[in-house]
Picture 1 (cartoon, rainbow, N blue to C red):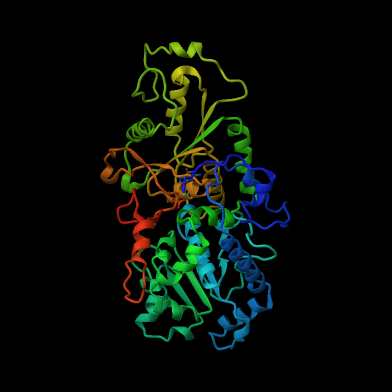
Picture 2 (cartoon, protein in one colour):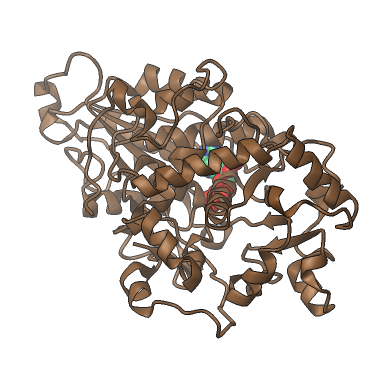
Amino acid sequence: DDASSTGGATAADELLGGLLVPGFDRSPCRSRYETSHYFKHSPFAPSSYLLRKLRAYEARHKRCGPGTPLYAKSVEHLRSGGRVEVDAAMECNYLVWLPYNGLGNRMMSLVSTFLYALLTDRVVLVHSPADFTDLFCEPFPDATWVLPPDFPIANLSKLGQNPDQSYRNLLDTKKIIVNEPYVFLNLGHERDIDKMFYCRDDQLVLAKVKWLLVYSDVYFVPSLYSMGEFHGELHRLFPAVESVSHLLARYLLHPTNSVWGLVTRYYDSYLADAKQRIGVQIRMFNFARIPVDDMYHQILACSRQEHILPEIDGDEDDLGTTKNGTTNSDATDAVATAGGPTTAILIASLYADYYERLRSRYYEHAAKGGATTVSVFQPSHEEVQVEGRRGHNQKALAEIYLLSFSEVLLTSGTSTFGYMSSSLAGLRPVMLYPARGHKVPKPPCVRLVTMEPCLHRPASMECQANVVDKEFLARHVMVCEDEGLGIKLF
Ligand code: GDP
């Protein structure tokens, strides 16, 4: 499964190998049919089984989604506390996805929730508070996935980690779950996680509950692979295990026109003419905070180790500051390439420091040999992570997409922002190790063997009932390079 490039798209690829259906009106969501012209790699074609499953999902969503009689009946059932009978023949079952944490986290949990819906024949509805609007287009034809505002469960944004209706609490109070109008599932990584969710007997019970609320900020797909009952289906859906997040993210997560405007204006202005685009995503977490100079050195050391950024003439250890006496003899001989820079480095970071240093680096030094001209760009530097502001999330999404249009990616360990750009790009990134204990990591980075995101804290499986294919897990589930407690698919 070599993640090799297939080059730019032709008109025929607009549907991403059949992932997307034709016939959507183009103007409300331009990105849907345009991303194919920007992606550089499409290493995995969707299986025909996945395509059939997606078409069946779309039909189900159209039948059961908001605005349909079946939706109205299902809501009535919920409003009555489960007392109003629903005709079994007209069964529609739902997953209400609740946004939580940063945008990368949200995208990963949404993708995971969608896969769970495919596996269990449910319909995904998205709770969209103000900061989650105008980010993603409607993904399904002739239907909406936005949870209507008159949904009977109030205060969805304030339920917290472990409300009374959490699966855990319901089990503790020995309620008969199938009679519950809805069940709240915490599939995140906090201590209130509903571990029993991953057990087969519990799946049989939950299958009878019409409304499931999913609260999660993680990519829980690796845990779905650990559940014996889904194995056959997952194998048919994704013959290449590494393709799950790549295909599902491209299927599901289309930026709205506002975001797509940011993306395409930036790309067309600064990146389009380059021969090669190198995306560099620098994330500084509190648990791994190190001084900017140290991080910059780590980036350069990694770049040297994995041959990411163009090398420069002169000082090997430059810090982006002018060094007296450094002359770039080759620079004078360099042949400037007409029609734009050869290499464009796109930085995504909350801070401007790395952009400043890298830009100075290629201003003050010629690239080795002088044959390459290097430009450095950074669309925004928001300085602090904000929750609950739409404009901030829109920029984050724009940058995740801009990174995904790179030929080469250098991302930051444990960052879901980076995970999502790699998945969308269809690229195995080089990843900077997080500076645990605030120590500059050695080696600085690692070239990943999979583009699948890491599940940082998998729920410990506490059930005997699962029939797990141990051999499969050994071949396709590995410990994450950037998080020793995490697992991921490869
Ligand atoms: P993670 O924390 O790295 O796993 O990624 P998340 O996306 O879940 O949360 C980080 C949030 O911080 C993002 O959603 C953005 O709001 C913000 N953020 C972090 N890095 C960047 C960046 O490079 N560019 C922009 N625009 N925002 C960022």
